[in-house]
Length: 106
Image 1: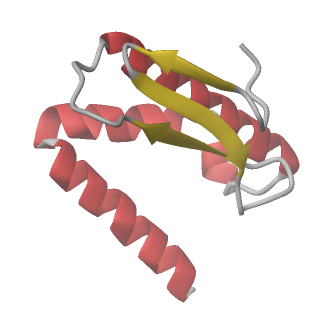
Image 2 (image 1 turned 60 degrees about the horizontal axis):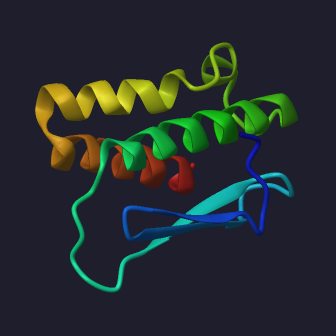
């Protein structure tokens, strides 16, 4: 599936939509909404993987991403997923936040 602003769907009671991101004109953001607790199916994880990998590829083509990331678009997302698997999601999230903070300070 090629993601674009305005797309929306529902996976097991978890609504999702794609909206315009902030990084570039082609950047996209994925929003989720669940009005009550619902079981989260693995399909939600697959949606994340497909969305974030595709968005990285688009940003790489535009030259927004660093050369090291652009050489293998999608690898950055996969590396953070593997980090979450090894260290736990909180440590992986903290590493991502530290990376973003360092980039913002530069």
